[in-house]
Every structure is written in structure tokens, then in C-alpha cells.
Image (tube, rainbow, N blue to C red; front, side, top):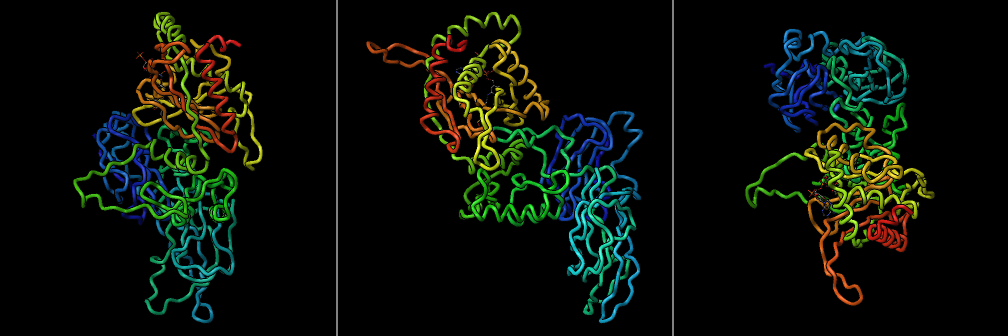
Amino acid sequence: MNQVVVPDIGDFKEVEVIEVLVKPGDAVTKEQSLITLESDKATMEIPSPAAGVVKELKVKTGDKVSQGSPILLLDAQDEAKKATPKAEPKKEEAPRAAPAAAAAPAPGGARVQNVAVPDIGDFKDVEVIEVLVKPGDKVAKEQSLVTLESDKATMEIPSPAAGVVREMKIKSGDKVSQGSPILVLEAIEQRAEPRPAPQAEAPKAAPAPASATAATRPSAAPAPQPVPPAPREEGGAKPHASPSVRKFARELGVDLVQVQGSGPKGRILHSDVQAFVKGALAGGAAGRAAPAVKGGMGGLPFNLPAWPEVDFAKFGPIETKPLARIQKLSGPYLHRNWISIPHVTQCDDADITDLEAFRKAQTAETEKRGFKLTMLAFMIKACVTALKQFPQFNSSLDKSGENIIVKHYYHIGVAVDTPGGLVVPVVRDADRKGVFDLAHELADISKVARDGKLKPADLQGGTFSISSLGGIGGNYFTPIINAPEVAILGVSRSVTRPIWDGKSFAPRLMLPLALSYDHRVIDGATAARFTSYLVSVLSDMRKLIL
Ligand code: CAO
């Protein structure tokens, strides 16, 4: 059994664990990310030193760790055990502060100093992705000067001293290694304190464990899976931004997933966060959510009172438990959709007495073929028929908020309850599939979802969603629209009710439906027509073939 510990992460101590990516019982491959650490200067993922099975976790989200802190116990595969007994990378792989380049005295108590890239471990030819200062700028000691990004980590190089930038020696896109000149700094003498030795004032690179993975890349852990209404388009990948931009966003209470990056490869820059806040204060573009201030439930729009902070322990025993990974990922999307889409929910009941009789008559056949035929397959078919009749339900608002994009394909997202949380895999081209094919596909895709094996592509491209709680119970609910879609159908459990047929009450099997729609795109009258049409199709399945 191997104890995996935090490797040499340079001078960083007490760094926060912001994500634990594995759990006991998980089989991990060598180099697979285990946890994500974040300091104010770097974000990094700690990879597994070997392939094996996680036996026990020694950390949890929110813990503070330093070099040598235990992460987990790993039952490593034999070969790996021999090859890699410990998690620590070689000492020389760790980033080290480089001595600052010689500083020459300058008139007026200032010293001109060439600032160079410090020891950044084994990294060479690392790209400069952002230059954060310009000639004439006053900088404080430790203020970030440039951001470097390799495929393993994002790191900011801080200023070794307070002073004024005299000359830049690099620009965005340049490739640098240890010792490459960054800029010329006219350092201001701190007369009150004795000047530290050059070694001590050298710029310190943010930690870059040799095999850490940049947090800005999608993690090696299973692809995050959004739940309704998390946008499948984002695929749950973390926003691409440097640590200082993340910090800046945190200070302003801006949720980075809502910010459009204008940097290379869509990276979010300081200016993007500023523009986002300005836009939100000015009322925001159509469909854009207001930035949130951190509150007890992950943020509230600006102009609302702060979330109440209550010491619950004062009133009785309590227990604090982390949200599931998928909940943490999908919460901001749900919140965005809830506050930025004007939802209305239209309810109706479909008489499915005949359809249920037909379904039951077919079940022997499908069971023989190895899958279950539930009402959901018919629901998908009926929804496609209604979407064809009312194309605005199969559309999305464009960025300007002035046009809708109507889709001529019918990819239906289906909410699936899994042990890890809700996910919404997409059944593609539902219009071209028969009810049996749909039922078969539903069985397959919900199994893949429950096994946690969905790929990002399985979650993308939906045009309309269905959330069925029919197998569980309840009577109507208000599903949250899965942006950029404009409507979602919530299906509840069917129940036999006495229905007046004009002469007498007859027992009929009624299916409760609740359609949430985006009122910017769909009028109330149109929504009522859509649900009435859907009800008529479900009540008389011959309409499915029209
Ligand atoms: N009324 C009455 N019974 C229903 C029903 C309905 N509307 N829908 C399903 N059932 C029955 C099925 O016929 C099945 O009966 P048997 O056990 O006798 O065969 C049973 O309920 C269980 O069905 P199921 O859940 O296995 O299958 P499904 O096709 O209806 O649903 C799936 C598949 C994956 C959608 C479902 O399992 C699931 O995960 N639902 C949860 C979705 C969810 O949590 N949504 C909430 C989102 S909130 O934003």
C-alpha cells in the first residue's frame, strides 16, 4: 500500500484543497489527477504517482496542505509500486526561487534591477499568456508581473521588489525558460527595513509540480456532467483563467463560468471580468445573468441583501457535509438559468388510459428483447410531434437576444438520476427513431449515466429536455429550463382519477405534465396550445403517426 503525499510545491504552504477528484474504490491511472490545490498564485492538480486503486482518502475539500501532507492510500499495481514508490517528484523538479539578477544603484535611492524568470522546475519554453504590467507602472513587492502557462500548470511570476517598471523584455506569446529576462525594474529602497539578500528577494514562481495538470484544462477526472438546466455546451469544463483573474473574480463575486473569455483559446482576462461587471451594472445584455456576491448558497444577485449567516450550532446539533461533485458543478448553471430566464410553468393532464393499455400489451415483446418499455419513450415521440407543430419550442435565443435560432433536428435531453447526481444525456435524432428504439436507447444511456461513464459529447446538442419523475411519484413540479434551450417538460406519476365524460364519471389514467418555458421566446397562449396539443397526442396515439 502506498501513501501518496503532496509533492514538493516550492515555497507554498497551507495551500487549500479546492477539489477532491477521486474516492475510495476508484481505479486510477498513473498521472491521473487526484486533487486540485489553489493558492493565490497558482492552480495545480496533483497527479497519481502510479496506477492502482484508491483505498482511503486522507484529505477533503477545504483542507490546507503542504509538501508531505498525506493525500490518500493507494493500492498500487505491482509494476508501478516498483517504479514509483513515492509521489514526490525529484527535488530538482520543484520550482525554486532564482536569485534576482544583479541590481545596480540608481540615482535617488532607487536600484535598477533586471527581473528574470525564476527556477520553474523542469519547464522550458513556457508560453507567456499574459503580461500584467507596462513601462511606467508602479508595482508592489509580490505583485504578479506575467502569467506563464504550460500544459501542466498556470503560474504567475511576482515582482521581487516594489518599484517602477522601466522596460519590458517580453510580450504575450513569447516562450521563456528559467533566466529569461522579463523586465527592468527601478526598485524603490525600503529604508525602514534592512535590504534582504538577493536570494531572499528573488521572484518565486508559483508551484509547478512536474506532473501537475493545469486547472484551466478539463480535469482528468470524469467529465463534469451538468444537470438540468446546466448548459451541456460548456460540458462542465472549468473556466480558463489565471489564478489572479480567479482571485479578482472572487473578490467581485463574479462567477467565471458566466464570463466570455477574449484571450487566446478563450482565456478569461482581467478586462473580461471588468467588462462583465460593467455590463451587469448597466443592466446586462439579453439573457446575461447579474454577477453574484458570495452568499451562503453560492451567490445572490448584487442588489439583494446578503445571505443570512446563522450559527446553526447555537440551536441544536449540526453536521456539515459537502455537496456532491455534480451538484457543485451544476449549481451555478442552475442558478444562472433560474435568475436569468423568465420561467413560466404551464400544467396539464393527459389521459393516457389507452396508451397505457397499448404500452402494457407491448412490454412482453420488449422484455423478450431485453429492455423495458416505459411511458418515457412515448413521451419523447409525442414531444417531437409537438415540437414540429410549434417550432419555437425547439429553438434558442441568439446572443443579441433579438433573434431565435430554430433547429431542424430533434435531440431530446433526458434527466437521469444517478448516484453522483443528476445528468442530462441527449437522445439524438429522436424524430427518426421508433418507440422501441427510443426505449432501448433510454435503457442503455441511463445505465451509462449511472455508471458515471457518459462522455461530454453525450451531454451536448440538446434542443428540448424531459425530466420524468413518474417512476418516483409526486404531482407536478417546476423544472428549470436547460439553457440555451427554451423549454423543458416535467412528467409526474400517472394516477387513476374519476373524469366526467358528459354523462358520468369514468376512471381514467391521468398523466400530470408541467412545461416550463422561456417567456421571452414563448407566449403563454402558445404554451397552452403546445401542452393541449401534447395532451391530445398522448390521449390518441394515432396522432403520433400523422
Ligand atoms: N407514471 C407511472 N409510472 C411510471 C411513470 C409515470 N409517469 N414513469 C415511469 N413509471 C414506472 C415505469 O413504468 C416503471 O415501472 P415498473 O417498475 O413496473 O416497470 C417504474 O416507474 C420505473 O421507471 P424508470 O424510472 O426505471 O424508467 P423511466 O423510463 O420512466 O425513466 C429515467 C428513466 C432514467 C428518466 C429515470 O429512471 C430517472 O432517472 N428519473 C429521474 C429524473 C429526475 O430526477 N428528474 C428530476 C429533475 S429536477 O430538475
